[in-house]
Amino acid sequence: MPHFNRRTVLGAMGAAGAVGLAAPAIAKTRKITVGALRFTSHSGTFIAAERAYFADAGLEVELKFFQAAQPMAVAIASGDVDYAITAVSGGLVSLADKGAIKVIGGALSEEAGIDGQKILVSDAAFQAGLTSPAALDGRSFGMTTAGSSFHYMGSKIAQSEGADLSFKPLQKVGAIIGALKSGQIDAWSIVPHIAKPLAGSGAVHIIGDVAQYLPEYQVTTVFTSAKNAADERQMTQDYLGAYARGVADYNATMIARENGQEGVDAMVDLIHRYVYTDRPREKAAPSIINGTMRLNEGAALNVASVADQLGWFQSEGLVSADIPLETLLDTSYVDTLGS
Image (tube, rainbow, N blue to C red; front, side, top):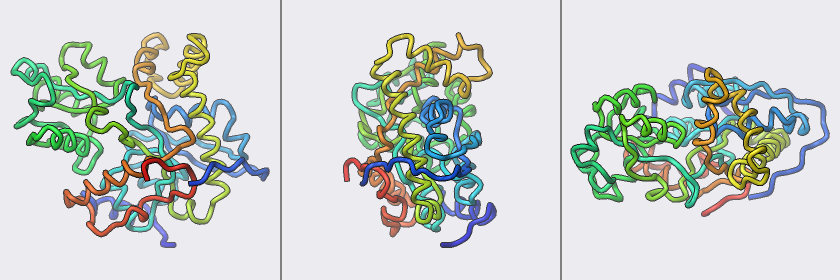
């Protein structure tokens, strides 16, 4: 198994433009670091930490927060973080090709009937006739970088509509929002807790749903180092089992509403300890609730969706054309869908 430090991992990033979960083992406590973004979609991790599901599995967890997915992937590959959640990207595929990481489960998916990611347009574009995705031809679309999930979503939407889009790399989500509001770009796609407040301001408009074009899109995945996947099987199973308990609680409360409004309120209180912490609870709650999308039960992984994403990266020349799906995935830990 090759060794990766931060320098070699960053070099790899730059080169890129089923079985059930085992019961926790009775063992001495193992210390692990789990990477997270302060997003509602990472709630499975927060719940597992707050409700001692990790502790029940014999894991002492340190949460390490990141501002973006790429540094988190670098931290996993170099061994600074053990487990994390991120979208599939060209950089992630490149790290897998270098033998640094493995995707071991699914986190967030688009699902019919569940409010998901929205297609947004600037007010200027909307007033000029861009009122549905069918009118995207010749327009500009925001993304962080080439090979990002935004790039993938925009390309798949354009392909379905027979549109030719101009992609604008703006590096950060905040910069994309600013460009969209000011009319410097025409369109973008993003999760509902960001999309809905933007549309509510009148500066942008929602013209469609990503799920219409990618109905079972595996938006984010659970991943770890290739070393953990291969050599730390019990620890990895225990981590996934505890994380899956958090996911089950989240879906039961926020999607199925099994615990009524009281349960939703309690869950919002828990999530608010990690998400929108700079806002008072009453202002954070609507965004947390608007961000509700079903998380993958049991961390099940939609292999067909990941295969489609890999194929797109390869067709765009963003990663090597000869990388097999097995290089990216270890499907031995969770149930798989679409395979």
